[in-house]
Length: 102
Image (cartoon, rainbow, N blue to C red; front, side):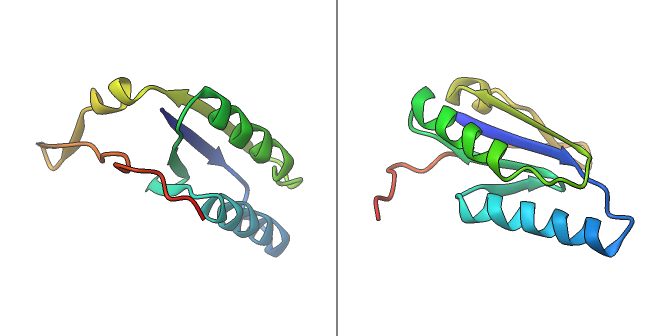
């Protein structure tokens, strides 16, 4: 399954930008990849792992306001996604064939 983190955070002040950067770096540190600006995605092995990452995101939410949305979808739903670049359809990303254990 895939876990999406989508966010609109304020960047008007230096403090806002610092909070935005910390949140973005925290997502990257947890294995999220940028799909589009302010849309990050992470493959998860199962619902339990997705729930764990949802709880982690809740803990790192910035205090500067803004909005963060988190949603999980199945591999099948992700592969059904349509992506267009300049009117040309391209294939969606694929998940890792095997999870890396450190």
